[in-house]
Amino acid sequence: MMTNKPIVLVTRELPKAVEERLTRDFDARLNADDKIYSSEELIELAAGVTAIIPCHTEKLSAEVIQQLPDSVKAICSFSVGYDHIDLQAAKARNIIVTNTPDVLNDATAEISMLLLLGAARRAYEGENQIRTDSWADWGATFQLGKQVTGKKLGILGMGRVGQIMARRARGFDMEIHYFNRKRLAPELELGAIYHDSVEALLPHCEFLSIHCPATPETHHLINAERIALLPDNSVVINTARGAVVDDDALISALRSGKLFSAGLDVFNNEPNIDPRYKELDNTFLLPHIGSATEETRDQMGFRALDNLDAIIAGEEPKDRLI
Ligand code: DGY
Image (cartoon, rainbow, N blue to C red; front, side):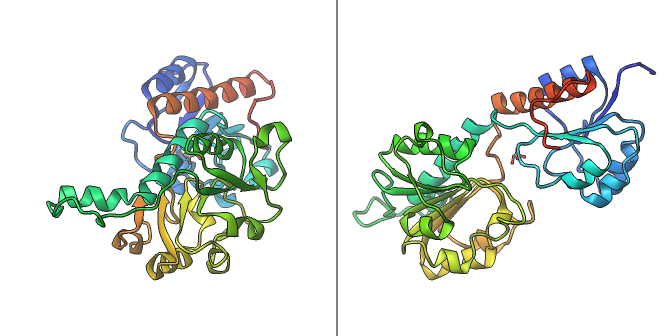
């Protein structure tokens, strides 16, 4: 059926309330099967569309963006991260790009805290023993973890999620240290101790929680040399992007006992992650669910649509990246 509504390509299945608003306001090309489109399919499906709403699972590389039809005026990503979109290529084609910051801060900090607690208290091993009927009995030296309360937490990237993580961790009396490209204003630091480089931060991290975006500068930032700067027996948590971590270095430190454990929600090459992580008992692994709550996913969708509405109305979208 022909309508005068702008055509919008939605690359993945989105929450019901978000799709309802999409079909009410737009001629929406939805993906009911939630199939992951290849680049070729995406380019083909974009014929005649005004906007694309992708997720981080679609790689909008320069090559893909260059082949998008001229009708595409906006890419309103259903994600806070935008490492899957080549912003310069979009700019060259006058395509506006937006993301969905803020609305997923709490949900992601919750998963960071879950990973921190789970990795420290060996949650995976404990649960696995129950599920495989291999739990012998209670023991005074059985399944000893690492206490969290009162320990030092280093936050790498004190942006929106990092600040909420700090707030949650204060509930466990943790001493907060951080590195951020820009030092926070004193009223936002709330006693957190600033370090002016990653190298200066790491020796203070009994727990290290990664919250920086994936950029060329942060690629494999956590490598063998920097892991060596962590105190022995520390715990690494990552809810940001897998690309910030060098898998070989992290796995080797987990195997050697340099690190006590790691809690990971994000990986290089998702969902085909490095299989060695699964062979280790001292990893607590989740399938990229940092923002996966019903409330947050609705809010992410509404935020993407608010941006799209603004662009279509010729106004400045709140979350313009380029
Ligand atoms: C984000 O929004 O960047 C999350 O990682 C989910 O894509």
